[in-house]
Length: 119
Image 1: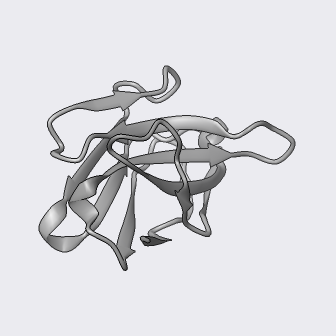
Image 2 (image 1 turned 180 degrees about the vertical axis):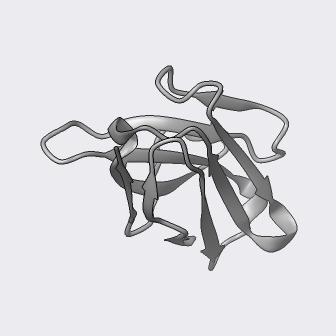
């Protein structure tokens, strides 16, 4: 069973960049597809990005396409989310999640990291 821990959140001005990291432990990282989700106060959790186990295929939510990039380094058991051209509406708690490659459900979640974008 994999454990996930996010880092890299913080306060940034609009137009700036941040890179989030998610370190995995306790499982075979390459068996998992990984995703990033976010939740702003009073809003539903939103899909941000996902990446398959090999890193060859990625998916993005419409609101972040062209601005965010998901990547992974299996040798480091880490998945990243590079966020560029940040907007105030990107402010949220960002969660890393994992699912076994043959599962449709994200069963493993980190504690989240706060990203705040000031205008």
